Length: 111
Length: 114
Image (cartoon, rainbow over all chains, first blue to last red; front, side, top):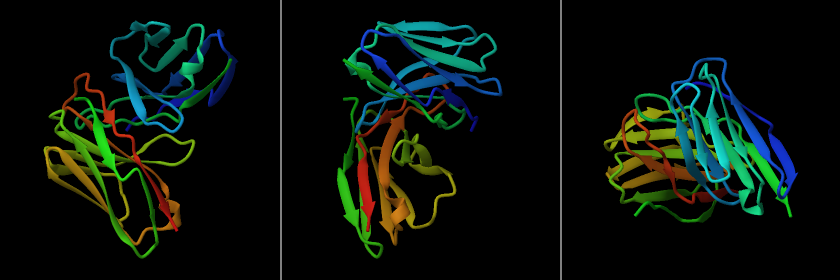
């Protein structure tokens, strides 16, 4: 599958601060999916982006897919302690719908 | 019902034991997956079943043996494991195809090999 790099690996913010994680690829991606895994939990699907320049919002979360379809970002506005977890991105490969996860960004939010 | 269930939640086994992990979904998904996740790492794909047939084996050692008895069940048979196989084993399911098909993950089985 296609490989992606996620940055940062870890971020610690104060509650109320914003947070952004980036997902970068050296090759053009057909799509990108984002998942969240809470500590001790399992990955939960957040969104899929398919179109060049696509922007999708879910409450305080904003997802973007770059114009060249080589990068994506997840931005959280005014973080809350419930946002704690690891955010993974990954392209969904064609055929058998397999995912290749990036290494993830671990977010810690202090009250 | 959008739930994937896995049993057991925790498993401790010796290197000479034989055990099985079980996964079940009732969403009508015809693709099912096994992932292995080590601490602070992303899930790594092990196997993919599509329409109850093994379609992808990511070069997993033969001490891991998957089985898909029917469209709702997925098993992972374990034999002669090594301590480095200790990890969280996640099952997931999805629709088959190239559309916007998210994967639904189960809670996982935390395996410790002693």
